Image 1 (cartoon, rainbow, N blue to C red):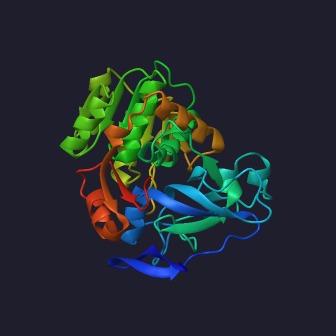
Image 2 (cartoon, one colour):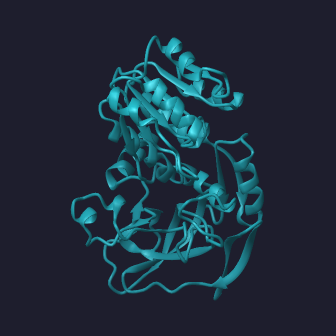
Image 3 (cartoon, helix red, strand yellow):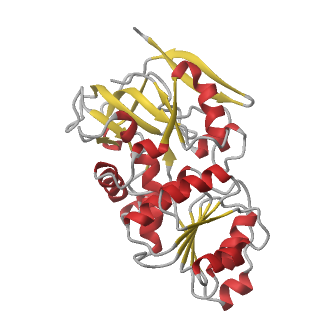
Length: 342
C-alpha cells in the first residue's frame, strides 16, 4: 500500500483523508499508530481557541505506535518496537536547549499541533530520538496516557515540595484529575478540587481529593479556605481563564504559589498589587521533560495512576469526529482514537 488515512481538522469539521505514506529520512522512523488520545488542546484548536495552533491542522500528539522502518542513520530504534512520542521538537542549539530546558526551546515545534504531521493517522514519520520505548507490562491504553500524565508530573515538580502541604486544584478535567492523582502519589496534605461539573467533582473525590467545590458557587475562595482550614500552600490552575486565576490568587493568598497548568485561550490579568504585597509566586508550567516521562511510566506501572480511571471511551479512526464530540461532552476523562491496536 502507498496510501493511508490521516485526520485533518478544518474550521467546523473534522475529516479523515487519504494521503501518501511518508518515507522516513535518515534520522527518522516510520511509526504505525496504535492509539492516540484526544487532548484538551485538540478541542481548543478545533474551536479556533488555541493560542498557538491555527486551522487547519493535523492532530495527534498523545500517541503510542510500532516502528515499521528506520532511516539509514538511526541507531537504537528497531522495527517492531512499541514506542510513544515525545511531541515537543526542540532545536537543541538555543540557550534553553543548552541549559537542559528543551521544553522551552526558542525555536520549538510540536508534533500534532501545527506540525505537518500528527499521530491520528495510520502512520507518521518523526525523528527517532523523539520516540521512547514502552515497557511490555503497559498495554496500549496505558501507554497513551504517558504523555498527558507527564504534564501534571512536570507541574507538581515545578511547584516544589508538596508532601503534607495543602493544595487546591482548579478544574477537574483530564489534566486536573491527573494532577490530583499525582499529588496524592506524592503525599500531599489536604487536596481541594473545584469544577462546575458534578460528575467531574465526583471523579476528583474518587481519585483522592479530600473536598470538592462547585466552581460556580459564589465565594469559591472562601469555601476552599473553609474546606481546608486556611489558605492553600499551592494552587494548580488547570483551567487558566480569568475567573480561575482570580480564584487561584485569592485561595493562595500570602506566601502561596500558583502554578498555571492549563493553556489560556486568551489574555488573563492578575491583581498585581496583591501578588506583590502577599508575596505570591506565579509559576508557569510548559509541557514536560524526559524525566517527567519516566515518572509517568512509574506511576502507571505501580498503579498509582490507574488506566481504567482515565480512559473512559474509545473510537476507531473512522469515527474520529465522534471521539472529539465525546471528549467535548464533559462526560469523559480521556477518549482514545484507536487505529491499529495489537
